[in-house]
Image (cartoon, rainbow, N blue to C red):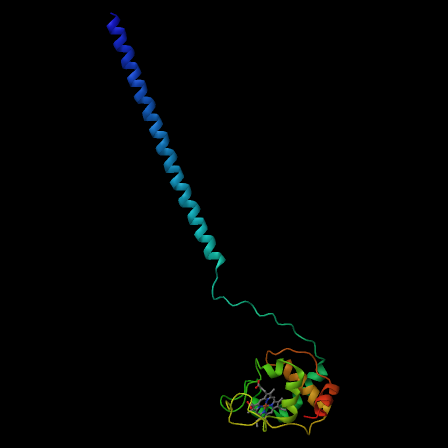
Length: 181
Ligand code: HEC
């Protein structure tokens, strides 16, 4: 009789322990699976983020500040350009490959006033060639034009063909013209 009771007690203990262990293992497996899923999801998210952060090779947008040049200066400058410059530099300022320099993205046109006005007044006949002989023609000087004409022309070219730059005054032209070199 006592043996029987003992045996059932023992049996119950064993089966309870097994059930307990099985439940423990099941919980552990569930927890593990959950962790694996979470880490996968978070690593995917990071990859997406990285792709968004590195748009390599996309050029930054150029900030172009347009300068307001009075319309009458633009139109008188264009008249001088059409008469004296268009033949070589073309109506769109693109020049002629191998013959005449383009006036688009030109350091002279958009840079400091002095070298710009100097080449307009004196050309590039004497002195070292600007682009190491890249152009077969020479740029003639336009010293015969009046200060006002040259100033309007210089302002017009500086604010055409996608260029942008400050207004140039007749006084500034006179100053460069009268400079002793
Ligand atoms: C006979 C053709 C000819 C005529 C006309 C001419 N140019 Fe030029 N221009 C050239 C050549 C060639 C160059 C390049 C000179 C060099 O590299 O030495 C040049 C260069 C220039 C440059 C410097 C460009 C750079 O970035 O190197 C400017 C600015 C310019 N010319 C403006 C003018 C303007 C404004 C006129 C009209 C008043 C004019 N040119 C008339 C042929 C001409």
